[in-house]
Image (cartoon, rainbow, N blue to C red; front, top):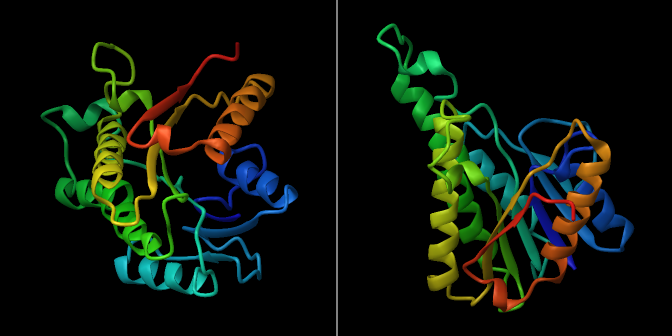
Length: 219
């Protein structure tokens, strides 16, 4: 399969990199677009300035230029998502709130929307658009992580993007979301969840279109 991962160039032990490494080991063609230069010197691993819409779209077009068909597209990238700490919601809050919010919306909503549209041009009914989301975007009856407004809001936007693509994309590709809990402080737990997520993404079919699959428990 031809697999495109946006955000797959980080260190080993993190989902993006581990997904790409396993897919390559299993014989798949993996194409990665990162938000920083990892000095890969690999035409299948490019990086773009995610502060520039034009650069992201241009580099993605370059990345997939030689591909006839995209089987899986995974949007896995993120960065510091404002607002993210309690002091952002106090009377003493300072800074360029508008700019910081725009950066959050860009990385979580605008850019994945643009890239999914571009990817669809090389997709079919067997292809998959996969958004990596979080329970923070779905559960409101909680008293933890309530300061992570930017991250939760951005992932909520991705959920609604997923739903719209599942209904309206003209290539009939599967559009879905995965909500995992990767406990990177517990390698044994992480490995179990990682394997579940990997197998789910590779094996899923049209029954998963428009749905969110959560992976939190190791049992």
